[in-house]
Image 1 (spheres, rainbow, N blue to C red):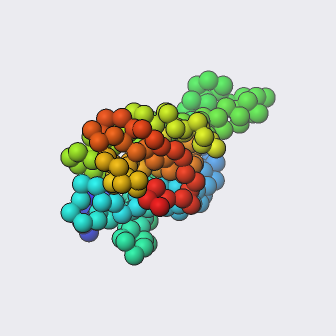
Image 2 (image 1 turned 90 degrees about the vertical axis):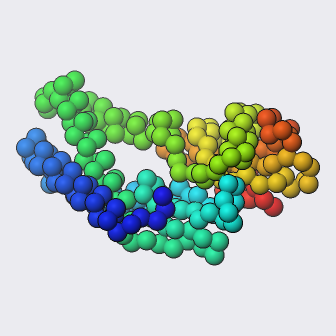
Image 3 (image 1 turned 45 degrees about the vertical axis):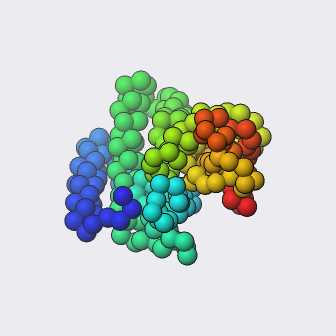
Length: 242
């Protein structure tokens, strides 16, 4: 849901603030560096929210819509609402998205802290080992997140949804020309083919590790919508519809 009611924003904000306060209390009890951890998380959270508005975009789409469905930028909470004329920044949902990242950073940092104590202990003689292991535990989940957590995408219904699912099953046929490994696909839109042949064209956004946007993949489907008979990769500044 792109449009948030005021009560939904307020309720989620209260829950996230309460969770952040409880996590800060936990950090204060567990480490004398709690203030440094809090400052780092407070800096990283809005930075990640801003980065998500660049990496994650759902352009306005037609498939399964009466007219054109609005798009969004940002995740997991949309920071921009996108219409055909452009994207509008939403300060309230940007703040909400930043709170989500703040809670995630504080929580995952706490898990890493507990794991380090259990695996290595508190010995200063192996401080380098603690640092590199902690860094790995922090970075690896972010690198592999696209494998487990899908990015936002167009929500289509009916026959376009069936065709899009079939297209994603054949995406492996066209990802060998991508400049980076294709780890995750997100549906952009489903429209008639540009070559005026019967069938539909499915456009997919492609992501690599760390949710790095690669570009677009297009697949021209047969009239039955079961298989593709052509397709390819396009750069980030390309378009599936030109």
